[in-house]
Length: 257
Image 1 (cartoon, one colour):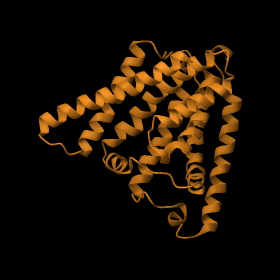
Image 2 (cartoon, rainbow, N blue to C red):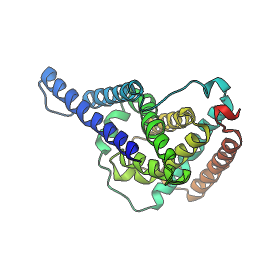
Image 3 (cartoon, rainbow, N blue to C red):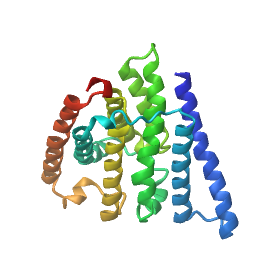
Image 4 (cartoon, rainbow, N blue to C red):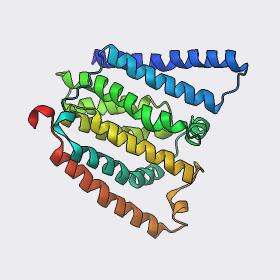
C-alpha cells in the first residue's frame, strides 16, 4: 500500500514539475503569459512521454511481452468492443447524477478540437495512465495481504478518478477504473486496459469534434426523442454486456494459457 501511494505522488509530481518547466520555457520563447492550445498540448505530451520513460526506466512498472506472446487478439478485440458499447451507457449514467463542476472544460475544448490533441488524449494518455495506475499502483495494491483483489481494484479506481482532478469526470473515471482494474487483475497485463482506454479516448475525441457543444445531452443528439435515447441505450448494452462476458471467458494470465 505504501509503495502504491508513493507511485501516485511520483506521478503527480511529474505532472507538476514538467508542467512548470514547459510553461516557463514556453513563456521565454513566445514572450506570452497566455494559455494557448499549443502550450496545453505540448505540456500534456511532454508529461505523458516523461511519465512513461521514468516509470519504465525505474522499473516501477514492468511491461513484459509474455502475455502478448500468447496471441490474445480475442481479448484485445473484445476490450475495444466493450469500450464502444460503454459510450452511451456512460453518457446516460452521467446525465442521471447531479451535475458536478467541470474545472477543465475550456482546456478540454482547446485540446480536443486540435488535431495534435489526439496524440495527447488518444495515444499517450491511455498508455501512461495504464502504466502508472495498473502497471505500478494496482500491481502493488494486489500484493497487500490486507486487501482483497476487489478492494485493491477499488482503491486504484479511486486514484484513477482523482488524478483527473476534475469533479465532472469522477463518476465515469471511477467506474471505468473498476473495469480496467479487473482486466489487469485477470490478465496480469496492462494491454487489455490500454486497448479499452485507447478506444474510449479515441471515440471521445471523435464525438467531441462532431458535437463540440459540451452541454449537449443524449436527448439533443437524438433530436428530442426519449424513445430513441432508450433504444440507443438498450442497443449499447447489448454490445457492452456480451463483451464483458466474453472478456470474462477469455481473459487469462500468460502462465494460464
